[in-house]
Length: 141
Length: 135
Image 1: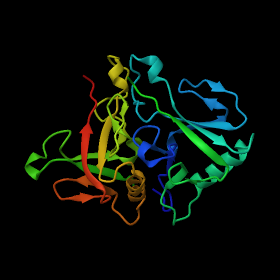
Image 2: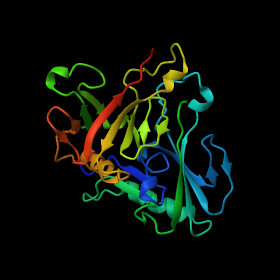
Image 3: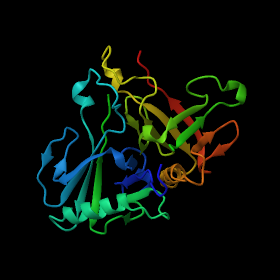
Image 4: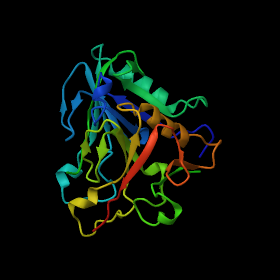
């Protein structure tokens, strides 16, 4: 591992109250290597995208389905996890994408590798223009 | 160098003898994500105020297209029990920070060891390991 290279992880928590932080709608963490793509519009776990001027999606390798094998539940097994990010400013995804990628690729030694994209409980976010996030968690059941 | 995460849920050294309570090591590259709630090998999350799940690529399922069944998509899970309800963020962050502690570590990161009492964060009070296999 090169010095200064971090294994970075994205944290998202869509809930607004601490008491609700108890399932997949609460705190979730993904390695940035799980990001498959980021694109405009709202995405479902099936990959279907609905047009939206204020929502972009982060498509991720599902944390709860193995990549190593292709099980018989082919439809579910091919689904993805998704973080849909709602912006305050319409049609502003490019600025968000650029800021996120800069953070992912930052090599400042003082950074721990933890990237807090959005935390609704603590009202903290990486990008001020993020209004909310929604986590779509996929599983193999 | 790759960082490895170590877990042990055995009550004592003599009980360190199996795949769920015994010594277990995953490379950080096998960590697929962490999620609040209790995780099953199928990926199902059950609401839980004082537990979060760490999902890993399964150690006991190969990458080939052998006798294909739905279970091939299962994952390994380490459920982390925390003392403070509904507040996993500090523990999750401590795990990420420890994984990135190179060059100030040897790459062997103890997340929880019940035998020695070590843990990566003081809020961790226990773990439960569930393993997928190619049965």
